[in-house]
Length: 294
Image (tube, rainbow, N blue to C red; front, side, top):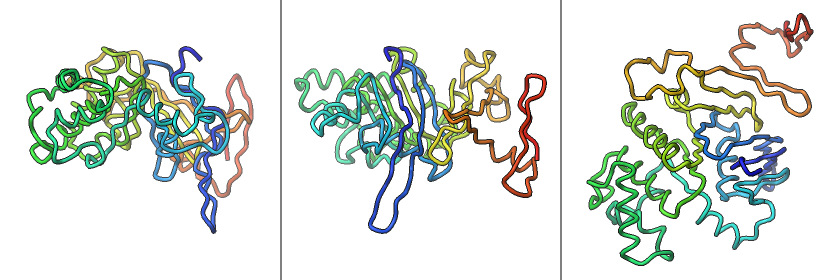
């Protein structure tokens, strides 16, 4: 598992109330390599945020196995889980109220996670260094109300990096900014990924963003349904260049995932084109291809 930052095997999460049980993850399998910059997509209720909370140590799995950076999240005590959240993962939320304290300046906000780990001088030096890394050093003395949404998100990324995490998790980081700012935030993620070797997992609905990362995993009904990987021709193109219309270009190849029981989930648009009258299809093997027909 040396090259795997995340290894989820048959992962299950069940939420129970007095009257109902909700199966949020239904045997999810996923490997994320160390140093990857990837996105996770899926409709509301698909299980993507549940999975992010699992690997972030914010919620405990119900069954299966889950390793992050070689650490078994199933076997962690509450104290070990606190240390894990402090040292292994950094989190960037869509809602900036969860990222920033409004009465503190940008540099003071970045210092908060380092409260027990460094001297005051070292905290300040590290905070300024991180703000410079995300292009916000010039706004270090500004408070939340004095920053735009995109600037707040860049400060939030600096906060998430304060304790040198190995894994950065971002939940809809471009959900409340315009497309130009979204591009800039993605460029920050790319910079952190290439310069620091940081593993970054982004949960997003932002179609433009997903077309600019090397790998996209789709979750449907609590399982991985498909993956998209960037075509070689697009891998080294600057994402902010005007040379490519990223929204209309076919930048990625899509693959349906076959689970351990041999099941696949066909994309909804393909099923719609097939025009099924019921839930049955015919399947046959022909000349090296599997043919699915109604």
